[in-house]
Length: 84
Image 1 (cartoon, rainbow, N blue to C red):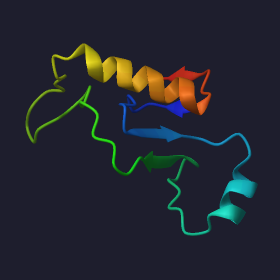
Image 2 (image 1 turned 90 degrees about the horizontal axis):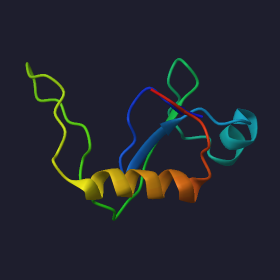
Image 3 (image 1 turned 180 degrees about the vertical axis):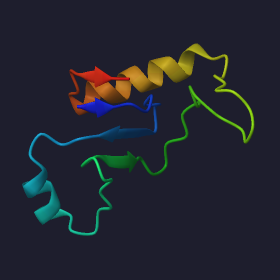
């Protein structure tokens, strides 16, 4: 399941359905306290669909390509549940 942070086209934060095999295959991963992982794809620079500058409200780049990149990534990874 994808959790609380809005995924963009080059990164996604999620909780694996089966965390033990993931941890065994990749022991160097840094898990958050809620059991989530954050994965960034190397070599991919998709438009940010969310951005917050210090002291500023949440801002979104005005680009339909960012939304399309995010949806394409979620589809490719097989995510069917998104929790914001």
